[in-house]
Amino acid sequence: MITVVVVDDEALVASSLSTLLGLEEDLDVLATLGSGEELLDWWDAGHAADVVVMDLQLGGIDGVETARRLGERTTGTTAAVLIVTSHGRPRQLRQALAAGVPGFIRKTSTAAEFAAGVRTVHAGRRYLDPDLAAAAIGAGESPLTEREAEVLEAAGRGGSVEQIAAQVHLASGTTRNYLSAAMGKTGASTRFEAWRIARERDWL
Image (cartoon, rainbow, N blue to C red; front, top):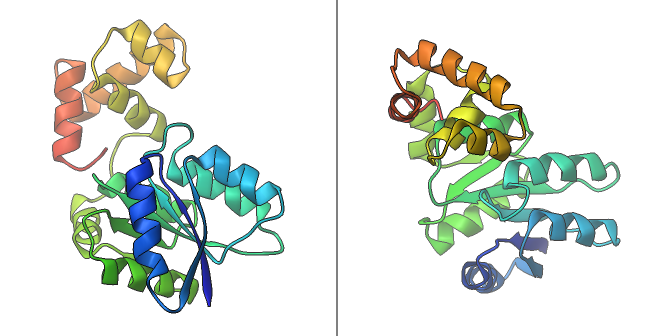
């Protein structure tokens, strides 16, 4: 029996996914949690599961960062992570792989695909959404640094430099420097144009 914990901040999605996985004879869903912080607290309390099925975009720390922190806690028991996302981007896939996450699947996948993903990562193999994997290969390497990409992603949501700086926890001057560098690398004249170009090229 493969034990599973589901983590998603959308309660309906979390409960539905738990129900679907629980219908599989070889899968046992131990808990349904609403955040990365809740998962880490659950784990620290002495609980564990074979596979963590976790949303990429969570209310607090995101799925990739949660997986990274979970990896630091699993010295004795190793959990495989299957990241679930509505809007997967090649950069997110690369980040997940760099964090040691073996599985990345879209929320639009079928129940059979979710179950297959759980079984595959539990067996120690990678399970990657084929369309996303193909896009990541086709996108090539991004010239943006992690910080430039983070700042540019925040700029795409709008707001002043000061507001963007607050979102990424940087000084306004440092944020301007990152935006300027990103604009130069994309050949854009405005930060929003730089964000659009980077998105089109799958650098974000």
